[in-house]
Picture 1 (spheres, helix red, strand yellow):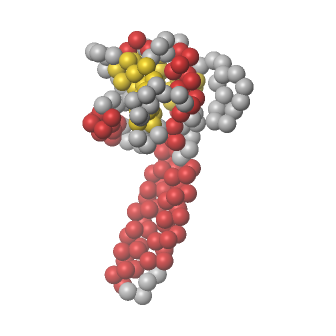
Picture 2 (tube, rainbow, N blue to C red; picture 1 turned 45 degrees about the horizontal axis):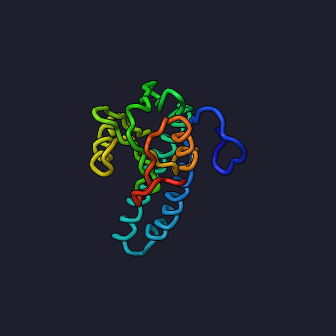
Picture 3 (spheres, helix red, strand yellow; picture 1 turned 90 degrees about the horizontal axis):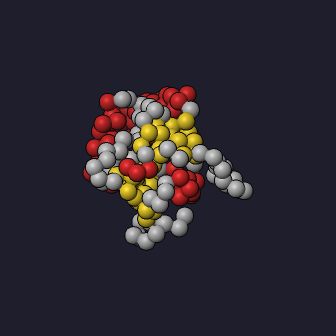
Length: 183
């Protein structure tokens, strides 16, 4: 299937890989550059605070870089095809288990289960223990643990919506305004 900015007919399954994480590194590094000014202040308190903040930012950069390497090594994180949605763990959620795909705040797409199906969390995280926390928070915030944010993926929201339309067998696609999704 074509990727962001691609043109022409869309064919085959949509295989989604990690992408878009470089902007996080650039953002954190630019913040680190700004904090170095605070670390050079003549006031000892400001300098210590600046050095502590700089250390935390550099730790965040390191953890994000490790996460990027791990996600790239996984290859395909999600595959949307005739069978449904298959995660990197090999579990497939059939289209019959999905009642609706709804656009949510943050330019995401939330997949809602058909009762009584239970959907997995899609949270490529650095530490396994945090996946359960991500599932809980996403369920509280969005009503489902299966939420995709294309900014961190190599597929756009339009790519994902097109794949759901193609393979989903009539799964309801709803925009944030409650109207039919036209993306």
